[in-house]
Length: 143
Image (cartoon, rainbow, N blue to C red; front, side, top):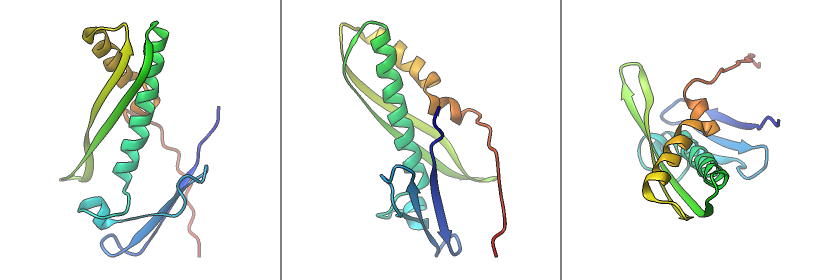
């Protein structure tokens, strides 16, 4: 299976500094982020927004796959994630992700759709990663 790559660079301190993010595919190329966009309101992106995008994309795919495997025709699944970050005693923490999804699915009732949606919440790869992924760190000081 492939290993996907993305990278980020931060310059300066937390409040006045800024950074950019790029992805292996080139879809993200030197996309700016900063304190204002993360903790206030700014025009650049932020890690929580990117996490929401990754999870909502994965979730939509997982739910569509599960519904198709169960024999339903999927016209579309749309998902919006709201990623909550709060300042706790331990520091800033992502405390909750609200998943708002809707689907246009042929031949399914509301109860069956909600059952499939709940299963996808537990089983999409990004959901599983957020419950306890192993982090392997390689760190070096560059002079």
